[in-house]
Image (tube, rainbow, N blue to C red):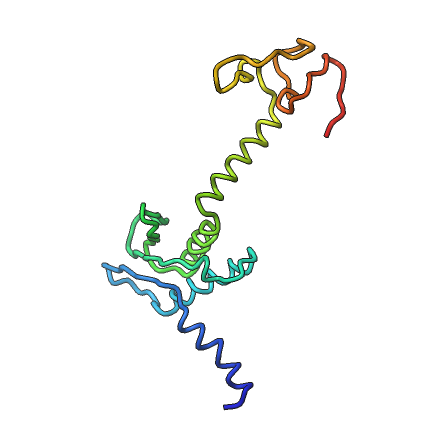
Length: 173
């Protein structure tokens, strides 16, 4: 075999051996192309990995159980992290859309999700006006009042800056 033909054959060998793990529960014996579904799941992981610059698509590959014949469509993740997709009947488009959502969701682990939530809360607190009551510390003791004593709300209090008197503008960031 020439070097060129062995290089062309390599993607075929790696594709077939690295198909995503898909289990299909089909109690109503509905039509479903099992091999195509496995390839669709694998390609979903590859495309999502490429889109989000994940170096190794297998980092977001996940085992999936597909249950056909269910009235309510969607997916669920149990306490052990097992993912189940429920469809009324086989639909490539629905399968790929749901599989894509799960692949994207798998990019964010619990630690990153918590970090993002804290960042969102921090940014929101910096953006919204804060009432004097909200300026109480976690210990329940009130923080010192605004040096100017003006108004009941002051966004600058979030940034540890004194409030401006009403009608006096401060430099915006």
